[in-house]
Amino acid sequence: MRIPFTGGSYQLKAKSFAVQRSINLMPILPEVPNTKSMQSLQGTAGLELYTTVGNGAVRGDLSSTSGRMFFVSGSKFSEIIAGVETVHGTINTSTGRVSIAENKTQIMIVDGVDGWIFTKATDGFVQITDGDFPVCSVVSYQDGYFQVFEDGTQKFYISALNDGTNWDALDFTSVEASPDDLTSIISYNGNTALLGNRSIEIYQNTGNADFPFERIAGAIIPTGCVGGFAVARFDNSIAWLGKDEDGDGVIWILEGYQAKRISTHAIEERISQATNLANSYMWVYHEDGHIFLGLQIDDLDTTIVYDGSTGLFHERSYHNPTLGVKEQQRASTVSFFDGDILVGDRENGNIYKMSTAYLDDAGDEILRERIAPHLQDEKRLVSYGSFELDMEVGVGLVTGQGSDPQIMMQYSDDGGFTWSDELWRTMGAIGKYNTRVIWRSLGQSRDRVFRVRISDPVEVQMNDAYLNSGA
Image (cartoon, rainbow, N blue to C red):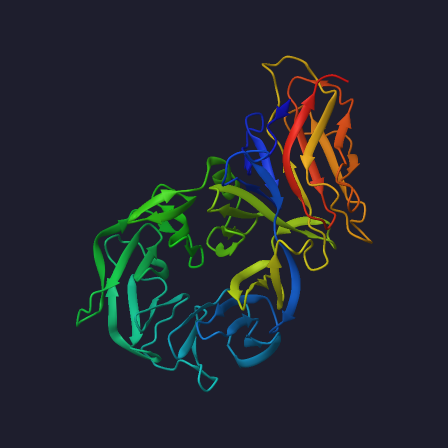
């Protein structure tokens, strides 16, 4: 009989209730009837090294509307041209995230200390020296104006029209519907969201002579954002990691002028394991019709990923071959440029291409893991004559690791706290399309959880699982 196996990540502290995890495996839902199964699991994207920039971790990036690609890595502001780095300038800091925005002719960078302007036509790079320029960590752009807020205040500033080097101390408004200080700013769909640590207010350009941006009537959302980079444009709106007077650690998306919770209790429990949410950041990309929202949080060993096409969460991780431990995905930044998804490394200046076509992380193995739901029959003793996975087989590579790809299965009879010995089976050498991935004589249990892992660099697709209680 078919048994529950596929799905997203939904593991609670009470493992006796919910124990599921999908790490480097994403749930796929059919868009037409009569597919083999109603849900499957597919391997997530891998990485291929593209180039290297700067002199440290990638701190920010911009895929420009002018068809150019820029990064800040360490203290260097660089452009990639045909895969080769051109350094355009140096900023005064080398760590911490930076924020980058552009108007038609300029690119602006801020890092919470200073600001810089890059002129596209001349490649000139200068520090903003206007004494009226406020200290800010995040920059946005709307309708010809660079937009910032002064860190630690409610003051929302704009630059001169089409000129990020020119600022006026009087060109600001106070965002005061709630007494909280601002934490971030983001432009979307012709609006500007001003995010505080307790609330959000939505502004639009009304052309007001004193200050062109005014709050939209009624556009006050009573939940704020934990930090400057924990917000992203997502699916024609914005998503953010929330904080308000009642707590934090909930992922929201904006529907109209209302906050809609998209995180689950299990994901929120996962987020609550972190001790510092202020440094969290989000990234977004599209691939194969999916729109992914990634959330990276200090202290966690996986990246939380929401798939807007399915409404389900999975996790992604990087297997550190030196330390032999699981870490968050390598991504510090993710952007689409010249037909590729480019990823900046969170620890060095490596720039990768990311795609499901890549089957490892730039030469390091991807460890894919699925922990399935509990299996029980009203606490009756169930015999496990065989356990079989319906999955893509015959996917082996021509030579080397993966020429005879292996899958490992373990089972737990105590709710996922301890596991059996590792039991290995082949997924089929190349062309062996009739391979059966099956384990036999697995004993008895009143409550069983199955776990499978794959690390070979091959395509992974798991459709269903079947139990035969006989021989």
